[in-house]
Length: 403
Image 1: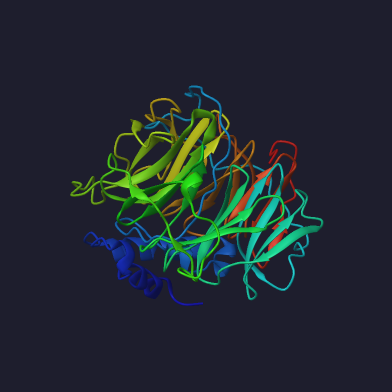
Image 2 (image 1 turned 90 degrees about the vertical axis):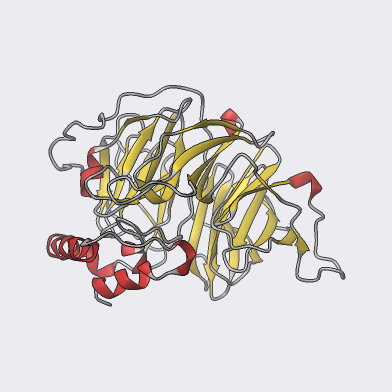
């Protein structure tokens, strides 16, 4: 395994989201990494993503499919500024045998009531399984470049990051519906109410699904140019995004242009966009995290990311106002950052400093179950959860962690 200091320096020179490091940052992170290596056996399996962005770096690397939510207010999780309490005593979970997804190597996944969708490399495919992961229902060729997968409104969206392309499939049969070029790098994608939203370093892009031309043509054999427009109300680079279809909106992390640093690092705002109009309807205060992931679970909204270690890297937001209302005890143990994925009933939080994965109650922030070596992404529906670590592995759920 490469030394953490070398990985850190590679991350900070990544041109995709360059932010100059604060003084003394290398030494601070190095000391913390060595402590984590002594205390957690699972650190040996962590990859470059473990230290992808710390304190004042915000490299872009993750995906976060949205889930349905209902309007509501939340204020029961641990309040910001209070002591979260003793270290977690949640039971350690087990993993089952890897799911058969064919010859490919899983790189991303999304789970819905209609099936489990897995993006693989070598060969590059999109594979649909039943929700239990017990049998393959359909497969289709997928692009080979790094990217991700999400599902919305009966469609499967597979994207490549560089160059930014969209490949669209029917969610039931995986029949190809279209290929589109964007002319920019893409980070994440969400579809709500007939509009697809795409995050990039140049802002938030929006396209009407009904206006998409469909299959590649002789004029555009590699895919038609995506008829997308930049959302004018959003100024700054965008990365994390989550669908919130019950409230007819998408939530996106926006890095304001010319932000003044907060204790050495200027974080994102979480902005709610009306999916049908493209207008901003709510936004959070500026947070202290970057490389953010946003998760909508039922009535609850969470954001996590990398940032200053003396500030919370895991935040519970009021669903209506997006104001910060709390955090979770697991926030004290995530290291330089937190990576989030939404389940159907739970919040999944992976430590940014190792491969510890926590199943968290989205209302209270309580830790329900933990695994020591799950890299992610993680997806779940009620009673079924899967994480990527040496293949796609089912997570054995206890009664408290419902999936």
